[in-house]
Image 1 (cartoon, one colour):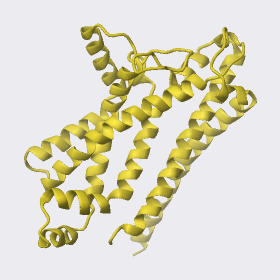
Image 2 (image 1 turned 90 degrees about the vertical axis):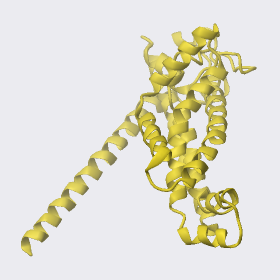
Image 3 (image 1 turned 60 degrees about the horizontal axis):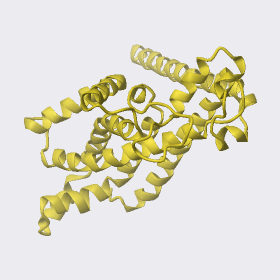
Length: 282
């Protein structure tokens, strides 16, 4: 009995140490970014586009990167959501991990682990083949390809948590497979689906490697899908690469803006999920 108690205490200590390391690392990252960037954070950064010589320490802001990131992530999320919901419905028509659905799930799991840079290179090669230049539309397609596997697997797992009794009740009332998937399973899984969509938006807005070769970069806000677009992660990269200390501090200020956007999205996800939970039958 004493040995079992000792083992339990050791496991609890290891869990506590793991939590402290993860939380402490996140706290240090946030603290470093805030300390180094707070002094350069001002209204101009979020209300103005870069002026001439911005990356040499002159005036302006990163409004182009903020708006560009929203365009990019929003467009990619729209495409990814429209593609992911039918795939999730198909997978939930095929219970278990055997057969073709099992191979799809395994392929999606593998795709989730592929670095986003690989997807960016793939789309870039496609652009070269089609003789296209960098543009917002290609960045949207790239980010959509990156987040589709994540979104599908998240929706699939959430839909599988719906109790079988609800499905049986739906079939008992004469509903078809599609009607059950659309009106019963999807409705019951909606809190988790919304959370997955918003978190995927956060992933899309924070990805730099995927759009490095496809979206390009510009100091202007794009007027069409065929214009190049700036993103916050790339703006941070270009600023931190500058030899001017003032511009490097702006990079940390841009990091604060990006952190705020992601944190707001996470909180919004939790609020919406809690509101939708009242419609879920447990």
